[in-house]
Image (tube, rainbow, N blue to C red; front, side):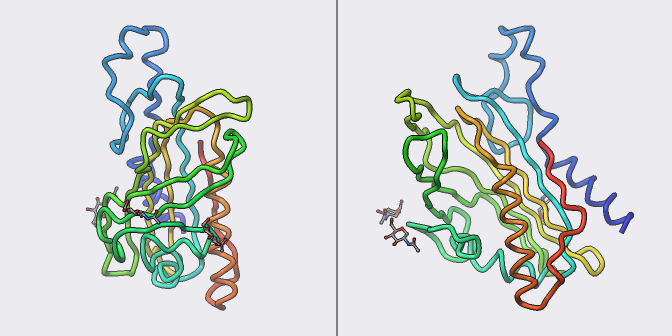
Length: 219
Ligand SMILES: *[C@@H]1O[C@H](CO)[C@@H](O)[C@H](O)[C@H]1NC(C)=O
Ligand SMILES: *[C@@H]1O[C@H](CO)[C@@H](O)[C@H](O)[C@H]1NC(C)=O
Ligand SMILES: *[C@@H]1O[C@H](CO)[C@@H](O)[C@H](O)[C@H]1NC(C)=O
């Protein structure tokens, strides 16, 4: 297990954008204009005005095979029924690049539920163990919403990386999201809800005891 975790953390260092916060812009506002706009590449970047950067990475191990976990999370990009999200529109089949899923979410920063479109940007199978990695991003940008106060605000976007792979008798699952939002969005809570939902389904299917070893959320 220890060796596995070290291997996993080196991956995490690659994908966790937590260290890319553009702190070099703090004391030199003029330098900040040289930073690229935040986007799918994890790097020092600048959010649109009125937005702030945040980054959350969640990972843990299920006592189940990657195939078993993938059978829950990965029937197709558009299928989010396992977390109970009401997907209102989809495009594309399976994991075709450019596939999209649109769903609405309650967000206390907005006066009404927001409609989020997510677009698949990369997808790779790990044929040797049934795992995969993929990236996707918010597709309906620029996004405007109204705060309960009546004030207008924007979302600059979010980008996600997800990875599932077999590590011994366990499956390592990692989900990283970095974003430019005008108000706090509870990505930590959303990630953890999905991780626990997968554990619960594995237990219901008799494929694991329902635990998540080393569940960690950073950011
Ligand atoms: C999902 O949303 C659509 C459109 O708002 C609605 O017609 C449908 O009843 C909803 N389904 C569920 C299960 O909530
Ligand atoms: C679903 O998305 C497609 C592509 O963006 C669009 O053409 C279509 O009108 C949408 N359907 C609904 C019901 O919103
Ligand atoms: C995703 O998987 C592909 C194929 O195995 C690999 O080349 C790529 O480096 C992986 N991406 C990351 C961020 O690990």
